[in-house]
Image 1 (cartoon, protein in one colour):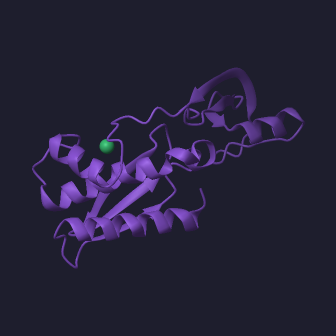
Image 2 (cartoon, protein in one colour):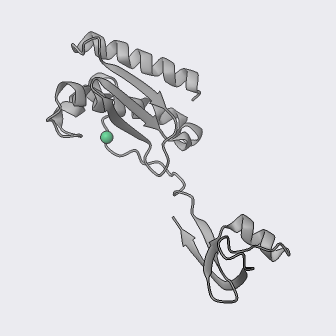
Image 3 (spheres, rainbow, N blue to C red):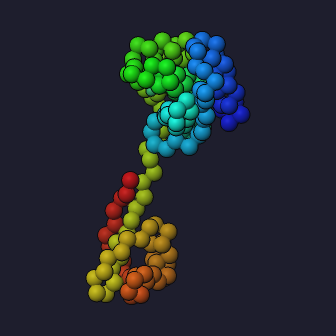
Length: 167
Ligand SMILES: [Zn+2]
């Protein structure tokens, strides 16, 4: 699904929502596609009356058929936050709103998303034992003969042989 279609779907859901509930002129929802991690979507209150839905770019790329359902799910959160702030996130009211918008009211979107990218850090030491962790690009350059110096002491760094994963 393209960004244009997402905006169009959002507009349609907003129109339907305005026709169904008295949301007031101050109610606004924006959508972006910058969500990282395993969740398909997320809804947040930005400030009074203003909400943001973030979609995972992997959802768009790998599961385009589910985008509308996830938008309904998140839009229902925005409406419930706005009108019934005391209601639980996936409670009865949320479910009714979500289904009215045309959503399935599934509470988890089982997307085989890639886990958040992990990267390696390589442990370097100066000859006097000052420790410094380099990233994979710097490590590859160092292994290819590049020299790295400890920033504060200016002393050359040598690979210790240790590395670890970061999340
Ligand atoms: Zn939810």
